[in-house]
Image 1: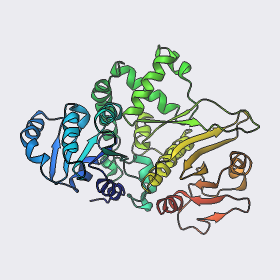
Image 2: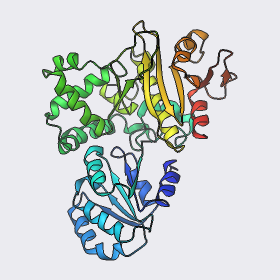
Image 3: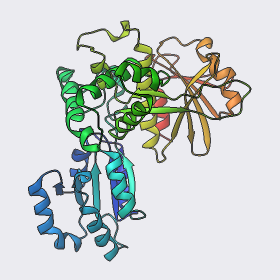
Length: 387
């Protein structure tokens, strides 16, 4: 069984709170991880499991065993009961582990019933450090879902296509998305084609036959299902005109590649969008590494109207970090131009050029004389994970 870095963080939270809420996309490993912490497990999507929980409830409230409640967003009635049970024994920690795969529905119930009673954590699909560094290319190619191909390449792309249909046909409508599934699928494919580009809701809406307000509202549902991520521009007072639109990414590279029609044997390095795919992949790996090192970073990007850009800007532990991401094995000074010219204007405390070179090469890590570090992705993740 793979060791998930989040496990330590969950255990620490259970030692400090009566309950922990663990959110994340479907099939990312929440249930498997939870079952390593407790055998008292209830899947609240299943009617018979709800009945079993109801019959067991009195005894459960009087035990100190950890109770796992999966897919809790499907059974809102449990949250007032959880609040009452916690308040009867408020000083007893580590009693409930609540799992959910649709963030907005779950968050509303948590905010109303469990505020101050539960810690909130997010589990991502597999990331570097959980998958061996030697498998970086496979993780990028197939994405991080345990069953999606990173552990068995034969599963790609059928697994991704089936997963997307489940989300489109069931989860998003249950979340409240009013779009018909065929429109949702078209929108996802368009977002994949525009992966990592500035968000233009009017242009996308014109292609879909809907207005920009509707496009933006639909995008929020995709965020809530952990399918997409928006990086908003970092607001800073510099003597340059900055781009104001966010950039939108598919969070999992395997889902991105499936939506773009990439077959198992296709050469993604020959695709015109390969740089954008690598950029989104690196951003997710950096955010996962930092989140597991105790602290949730806030991600941004910066781009000037003249085209200067820093791919990822993070506010983390009181510092500002700037990352430039390049799919190259031989980074040059020109690749770090924005780190030399734009990052100082932002007041960045740490500047890193992350490249696609091989770990353990002679130049695997170097510190530039102009105040920035150069390192392959694997070395970057190793350093961030140790913080």
